[in-house]
Length: 140
Image 1 (cartoon, rainbow, N blue to C red):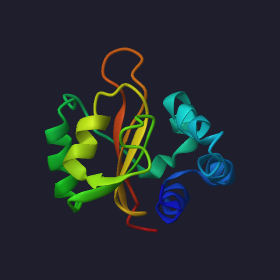
Image 2 (cartoon, rainbow, N blue to C red):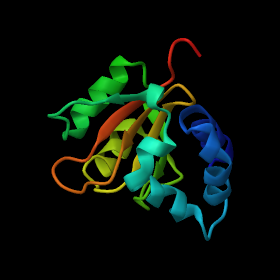
Image 3 (spheres, helix red, strand yellow):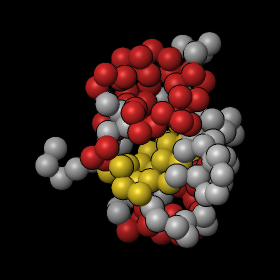
Image 4 (cartoon, helix red, strand yellow):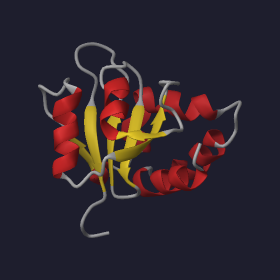
C-alpha cells in the first residue's frame, strides 16, 4: 500500500464530503474493504462528476482500454486500488493491472498519472460494468 498515492487519488477524484471517511477506511486494515465496496453502487455519489468520462461500449477488452489510456498520456506503470486482491495496493505494469481489473466484476481504480488520470470500473450487476476514465478537468 502506498499512502501518498492513495491520498492523492482520493483528494483528486472523490467528492470532498467523503474524502476523510474514505481515507480513514483505506488506512484501516479492518475497514479498507468498506471503501471499495461502497464504490460498487455509490460511485456516482463518491466520485467527482466532472472527472468521470464514460468509456462507451464496446469497452470490454483490456487492450482497448490500455490503448485509450496511453492516448491520454498514461505511462507503462500504474497504482491499483481494487477489490481484486491480486492487484490491490500494488504498483504494476499498466497492461497487467488492466488484465486483472477489466471484467473482474467489482470496483477497481487504476491510477496512471497520480491525481491526473485513472481508469475506474464499477461492479457488474448486469451487462457490462460501468467503465470510466477519471481525468482531472483542465480548469483545475
